[in-house]
Length: 446
Ligand SMILES: *[C@@H]1O[C@H](CO)[C@@H](O)[C@H](O)[C@H]1NC(C)=O
Ligand SMILES: *[C@@H]1O[C@H](CO)[C@@H](O)[C@H](O)[C@H]1NC(C)=O
Ligand SMILES: *[C@@H]1O[C@H](CO)[C@@H](O)[C@H](O)[C@H]1NC(C)=O
Ligand SMILES: *[C@@H]1O[C@H](CO)[C@@H](O)[C@H](O)[C@H]1NC(C)=O
Ligand SMILES: *[C@@H]1O[C@H](CO)[C@@H](O)[C@H](O)[C@H]1NC(C)=O
Ligand SMILES: *[C@@H]1O[C@H](CO)[C@@H](O)[C@H](O)[C@H]1NC(C)=O
Ligand SMILES: *[C@@H]1O[C@H](CO)[C@@H](O)[C@H](O)[C@H]1NC(C)=O
Ligand SMILES: *[C@@H]1O[C@H](CO)[C@@H](O)[C@H](O)[C@H]1NC(C)=O
Ligand SMILES: *[C@@H]1O[C@H](CO)[C@@H](O)[C@H](O)[C@H]1NC(C)=O
Ligand SMILES: *[C@@H]1O[C@H](CO)[C@@H](O)[C@H](O)[C@H]1NC(C)=O
Ligand SMILES: *[C@@H]1O[C@H](CO)[C@@H](O)[C@H](O)[C@H]1NC(C)=O
Image 1 (cartoon, helix red, strand yellow):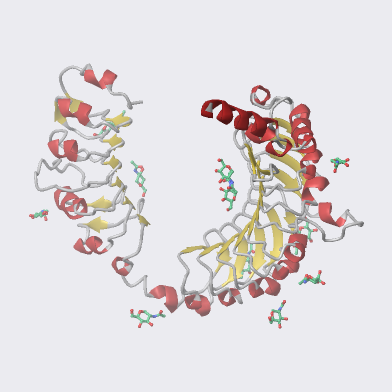
Image 2 (image 1 turned 135 degrees about the vertical axis):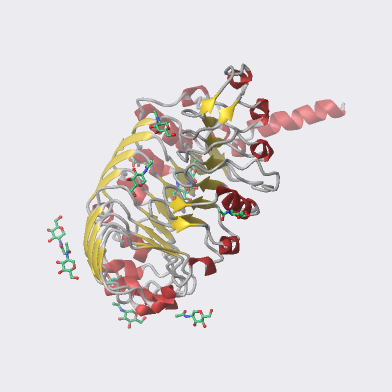
């Protein structure tokens, strides 16, 4: 009897009208499907006689209203349906990494519920800015709740939109990199009072950084590389919360203002490939007296320089170093270099090729460490010696480059114990013996 009762309860809840999404929401989603020329196999799950809350990629709230449409990387091809605007409870729409084309429908832009809109990595065209202003009936009633807009890697044209700065008081992320946007950085961005990220790199923006931009003091990430921005950087220090400042690949001029030192949270500064002049300000100079005082440095690339002699033991101060490239210098004493670096717990990538000419590959058992090393390149050094046994103790090694040396002896058997190794180059040495069979049986090796 109790099991019959349970069955009845189940039956009742199945037929109860509140247990399914509304016909209107279901038909809006089916309209999206119908408009696609490639639906990535969604039809098998999106059946009109089932509850759309159970469909793949769809999430509903307790009231059976659709809140999430998550259809990233599904191979969807065709337009974004304007009927998605009928999903009045929609909070998050993620259509990234598909082959969607056409414009962003006005009906969607007028949504007052959407918080997160991710349409990045598609083939969408048209303007992002014109859309809102062409709804005279609902001026500025666009995307009232919007917090995150990611429309990067599309083919959008026209100007950077700013209406969301006024209509959506909680707007935080504007990510539009890799499009074809043009014109100036709009002063209207200063109405975005809680904006934390502006990413409009790799577009065709020109003009100067407007003073109004420096009023958006909530900004943490300002990334506008590879445009045609000009003018000086004066005023940037007002953005005291900046963590990332990337203005590389523009036409900026003038010097780096001394006040850049006021940006106490700054972690990344990219100003390469501009037309700037003058001296590096002292604020940055604390790091230039000796590179070894930058204890938080995570990546150091010094390859293709005429550095010579032995590496300073102060390299050990760089406790956070993940990536180190010293390739193609004139460094000497490979034994000492490896001993100093092997104690680094953080290091994952080490390039030291084209140095240490005609030295001997150390067999030294005191090379102990490199616990996290994933990439090791000691190529084109004309080193003699053998493929050394200490390499067998690097459990995480994925790439090993030893080509262009004069190493002798056989290919050691322990190579098969490097379970993560997927790339190995030991060409152009003087190795002898057979090419061992186990090399063909290593699962990861490409
Ligand atoms: C659904 O969306 C379409 C296209 O925007 C619109 O014509 C229609 O009125 C909407 N239906 C409802 C019930 O809102
Ligand atoms: C959208 O989905 C992709 C793939 O799952 C994910 O990487 C991305 O972070 C999502 N976007 C947002 C804004 O959460
Ligand atoms: C789009 O940008 C948002 C916010 O920066 C991010 O969370 C999301 O992962 C991005 N989407 C993709 C596909 O990378
Ligand atoms: C900020 O928004 C208001 C209201 O729409 C507008 O009048 C003003 O011009 C905007 N500010 C800027 C700098 O564009
Ligand atoms: C920006 O480029 C447009 C053409 O795309 C041009 O009309 C405009 O004068 C340029 N503005 C500045 C400030 O260089
Ligand atoms: C920046 O903000 C200050 C005060 O908040 C205001 O007086 C000034 O006019 C603003 N500047 C611009 C260029 O918007
Ligand atoms: C680079 O800056 C100098 C002034 O420092 C200026 O004379 C020159 O025209 C600028 N070149 C370009 C390509 O902007
Ligand atoms: C450089 O560092 C020293 C001590 O670490 C500090 O007293 C000084 O203020 C710093 N200089 C600048 C310009 O940040
Ligand atoms: C190393 O750099 C020099 C120039 O600094 C170049 O001539 C040489 O070809 C480079 N060697 C290799 C192996 O790339
Ligand atoms: C190389 O470094 C080692 C210490 O690791 C040292 O004993 C040796 O003398 C050095 N060789 C030269 C030529 O300086
Ligand atoms: C092999 O290495 C030697 C130096 O050890 C170099 O002279 C030669 O060019 C290299 N050959 C190839 C094919 O890379």
